[in-house]
Every structure is written in structure tokens, then in C-alpha cells.
Length: 471
Image 1 (cartoon, rainbow, N blue to C red):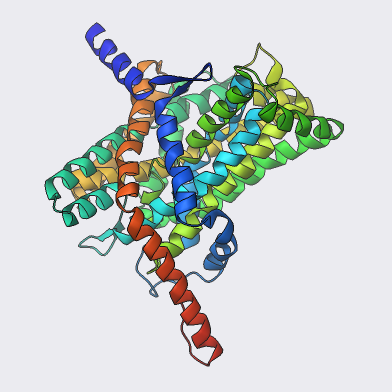
Image 2: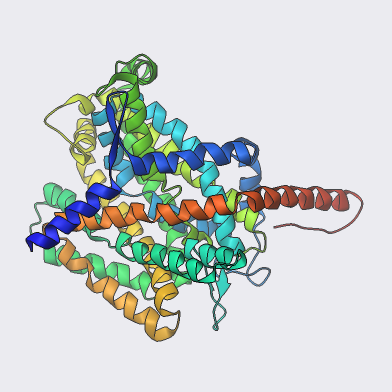
């Protein structure tokens, strides 16, 4: 066992290797993810500004069933991806950023989330372009298929299969749901006094199985209803905190701005605020990790770039809006500065200031966030499993059963190094995914340019009496 523990420690130490940056330690993997954010924002001509309105238009005019290739609507694909992205990290992660970098970290989360929009657009566009259709007519996609096809086209088919397989292998472990189950039970037990972790885990597993065993269509239907609900419930609590502390909001905004630029933030001044904000924004948005590509690949569209534009709404909604508003509420409430609290306890204390029922509201939010994340990541793991072992009925059912059975023990076991394995695998997914992005940088810019040309041609045709429609 000692040898096993040392191996896990070595893996975690390698993945989260830290470099000193102006006196602040930052994980190399976070810098690795930050580079494509800046590069592709410039390379693709700031789509995080130019394409926002068009992304909303795409959702309004999305193809109906039978009009384009895909298993679910573009809106359902977006909400499925958001179900996996907007999770407990958006609640506890903001509190962690405040603890590490002070109020200034909230502004940096907002800024990095803005750059993350472009990376999300780029990776999803490639995922749609290189998705496959199985014998039953269902689509499958993800960075593994991009790597396999692109490297084969460049004359390295075996390397493509190997690197794509490495991504799928890491994704299998990254999709292990133990942290979500464990953290949600911890919050529920605090509020309700519930101590039977097995009962909670079995109940949650049953609820997840209703969607997971039902397939992509069930996933899309549940996600497009549950994702807006969970965000609305959480933001209602956040708004209540802001209303309670309305007089403190201007000062909180000033602290956030001042902390980002003048060095009043904790842990290394302004640089510490930047590092903390960047780290949490990367973790919250998952931009560069490639996980959301597997959800967006289900989208019903024949235009990969259009789904890429829909995907750039993800970091805007999850990081720039949900995380920023939540962070502002915690700064206004003052609970972020209580050294006796950490993580989700900071958020819970802020909710408790509003009234006795609000910790219960937070418990509901935590369960909703955990549940939707479990459902989405179960699907991600299924896509990785399918790449490695095939997409036949037997292979798919074997994974679904294994996934559901793995949930109940997570509520009662001590996570310890299991968390290290999961977290390390999650961020190892970014290494091959970013390689795929840079391998396809040229074709990405060309595809985006051609998409806009078709849009312009379709608009001109419509004005002259034609009926061209681009989805």
C-alpha cells in the first residue's frame, strides 16, 4: 500500500508541479491552459466579442429533429455541457479563490472566463467537425476522435490512436464522481443531521440511473430543464444576500477592483489575486480540458462552427456571471475573511445571514449541482469508454452499470488519495486536448472565415428572394 500511495503522490506532484511567479506558486498545468486562451482569442479575431449575438441567434433558429445530423438540440447540448461545468466548484471554488487571492481574484476570474470563451469555441468546433456516427445512427465525439483523425491525416495514424486513447483513458478516471457525492452528502448532513451515507448514496445513484440508463435523449431533456433551475435557485439565494447587504455592495466592488490591481489581495498582492483567479476560472470553465466537447458533439447541426459559437456562452454563464455574482455576494457579506471557515462553509455562512431557511436552500442547490454534474460526467465517461471498447450495446451497458454502482460508496469513504487520482486524471486530459487545438489552429481560422462567408452569402440570397438558411 505504501508503494501505491507513493505512486499517487508522485502522479499528483507531477501533474500539479508548481513554478514560482513573483513569489507566488502556480501550477504549470494552469499556465498550460492559459496560453491557448490568449492565443486563440487573438488568432480567431476576438469571437468572445463578435459572436455573442450570433450565438444567441443560433439557439433561436436551431434545426429541428430530422433537419440535421445529431441526437439532441443545440440548446440541450449546451445545457448538458453546463450541467457538467456548473457544479460545486462554482460554489466552493469562488470561496477558495477569495481565500487564496482576496477579493481581487473575483475580477481576474471574470477576465480569464472571458478568454476561456474562445478556447471553448475552438475545441467544440473541432469536436463537431470530427465526430463519428455509429451503426445505430448515434453520434459520438470528443478530443480523442479529433486526435485520431487529424494525426492520421498527417501520416501518423498509430500516434493518433495512441494519444486519443490516452485522452480517453484519463477521461475515464477524471469522470469518477466520488467528490461530488461526498461533498453533497457533507452539506446535506450538516443541514438535516442525516448520518446514513449509504442511504444517501443509494438514493442519489438511483436518481442518476434514471437518466444515465436512458441514453443521450434523456440526458438532453433532463439537462435543459435542470440546469436553468439549479442556477436560478442558487442565484436567488445570492441575490437575497446582496439585497441584505445592499449598502455594502459599492464597497465590495471597490475592494474587488482595488485588490486586483493595487496589491491589497492576500498571498502575494495583486499577482496572488491574478493567480488565484486564473486557477479557479480555468477549473470552473473546464476550457481546454475538452470534456464539454463530448456533450456538444451530440448537437443537431451540420455547421460545426455554429455549435462552437453556442459553446462560447458556457464560460460566460458559468464563470463570468455565476461565479462573479456569487463572489460579490461573499465579499459584501464578509464571510470570505473568516479564517475559521473554508470552502463551501464560507458560502453557507453567507446564506445563513439571510435567514434560517437559507442553509437549506444551499443544501438543495448543492444536491442539484452535484446531481446534474454526475449525470453529465457519466455521459462523458461513457464516450471515453466507447472510444476504448466500442459503442455496442454490451459495452455501453457495462459502463453504465459500473458508473451507477460506483456512486454509493463515495458518500461514506475517506476520499484521500482517490481525489488525487481523479484530479490528476482530469487535468491530464488537457495535455492531448491542447495539442489537438494547436495542430488544427490553421483550419480553425479557415473554417470560421468560411462560415461567415456562407452566412453573408445566405443573407444576400434571402434579400434577393432566395431561401438559403445556415444553421
